Image (cartoon, helix red, strand yellow):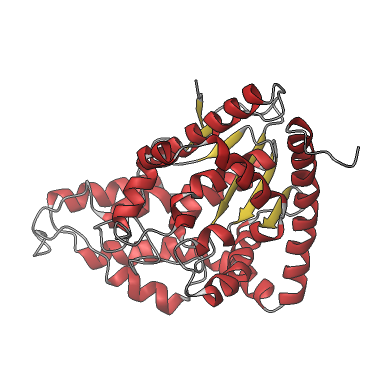
Length: 347
């Protein structure tokens, strides 16, 4: 049975191995920071952390625009470094430059049926969301197997995921158990899903869905003050709060959700909530304060990011060095897998 932890689990005395990462389809936004980047900065201090820039996975639904994926690898790396992911503590690598991963994927395909992939609720939901029912690429359909190869290549014991991704972890563990049983060697290890601490989900500035690049409702870690100001001013609030004197709804109001996550002065936030709820406080006053809070958070990240963005050669060198280290680890796992499968012809 798969066991799940929260980010508040006591990892201080454990040297767990973590695999996490992002699809390079554009710059990262504050939703990424709240959902994963912040925790990676903390977890790298106590865990053996691998962070994958998943360009192969990004191509499963961006195969017609490879330039976007290529360019985004550098942008994502700049975001990683700017928020404090330390390449001396975390191995950051490019997925497509790890040759062991596609080879492992090929071997694992024999351990999974089409029917089992079809039942994966995460895959089913994403196929529907992307409108692929009538034109489903094989690469997208089989990406849970590729994800299992990602995880097992580094023998990850913890994989940070949202609840909607838990079926992917279970599918990986089914492959692990099948492999170890069939080939009678405990080569692969099962992974546990690392769930985020329960709390407010960062919605997009439109208030209608989660923050997303594709929905054009995101605040990016690289946004200028002018861009940030325009986005905050346009943020969705309580649609029934038509006049300043009207009582406003705090719960479900994105402006207050953002303040809960980013403001350090919790006393002031509570005062604003109370005032807004009883009436007499305009949306623009609250948004002005939110702009100050977000600018205080984003500004130092933005400035660090500019330095990295202007030194592409150094950034890519750091990334390629991490990729070399990751390739050695994955290659060792592949060697153990092939030995268990009696594919070791050089002996």
